[in-house]
Length: 322
Image 1 (tube, rainbow, N blue to C red):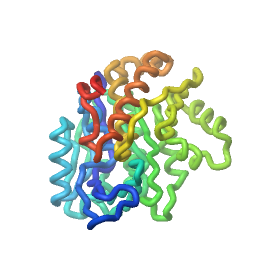
Image 2 (tube, rainbow, N blue to C red):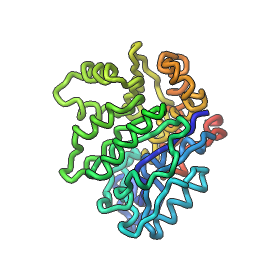
Image 3 (spheres, rainbow, N blue to C red):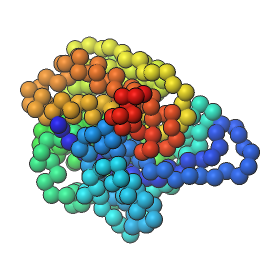
């Protein structure tokens, strides 16, 4: 089994008590452990795959909360660093009647942005792994350099690099994600997940087919394009197919995409992906990819039926019963 390593932000989602336009009574916020790469680490651990999180938390109450939550779900936190130089990031989350959310981030400054290569635990890539990254660790020069260097280190070690675009425009100083650094990260990926609207933003004036073909030619082995509750488009150099997620009533979509990628990576990890990668053939196995995307869709569908992130991610038992 190939271990999972997720790097980036762990933060506290402060989930609003209001749903849609319901404004009755005072608005309250309940803290839930979150952060996209941390969610993926938890998703994989809850599905029984060895999972490790690398990142920095503030030496504060919310940092204690996140560290305890990660550990309670079986995530290896030996690569988590604590600091007093900045606080743990917060995200205040509002939801509409369909469970779709908007974020108000208290970041920067934040502890996760201060992680550097010298904070890496020794021998982190001694054993080939799947390294998962997101664009939210590209929003400042220092953390962007760390992220891109980590991707290079992982690829050099024989590990597979997974990237979820996960664009959060209001985390960038200009109010819009910078296409340049995001593209640099994508170019280091073997596996790329992005939502339809993220594809449209990143491709700019390029036709979608041309942009996707360029990514595959450059070395991306698998591209997954999600579209909310719609069909997932799966692309490799061999062609394209779609998988339709189960129909559910969404309560909170916060962890839907992270549950999806967690289910996908967990399924691939169970195939001893590092050994297959050496043979350069895992992305040619359409039956494996269909199975992995089906699991991913069911994980995402399960997650959006519950509030919060970690607590909404299915275990193997819950997934089987779903």
